[in-house]
Image (cartoon, rainbow, N blue to C red; front, side, top):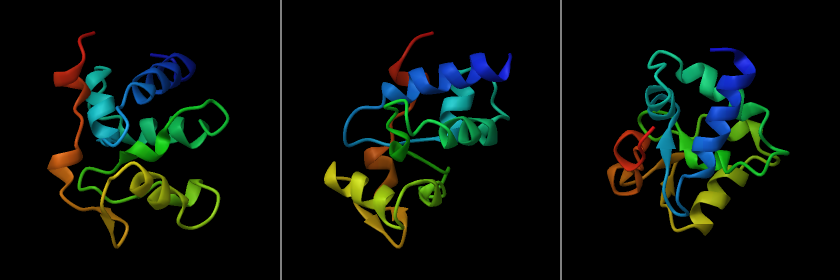
Length: 109
């Protein structure tokens, strides 16, 4: 899968994450048939700021806001999530399972 095609698919999936929900880099990679490519999903989202992609809804596998340094300001990712009702404590989503959206079970290819 080429980088550009993969990145476009990452953006498509990320745009489908419902308001007030989160998913993980790994869940997106798994859905796209590339289960070992969580970091590539992260790279794709690094460049998504001008594409109207809600990258703030993607966290690491245990709910840490590992992508927060790619948002303008130090707390913007946290603020965006909290504005959607997602609880964040110490840069980690609290009650992760409650907010987790799994594209593998929610979508069909």
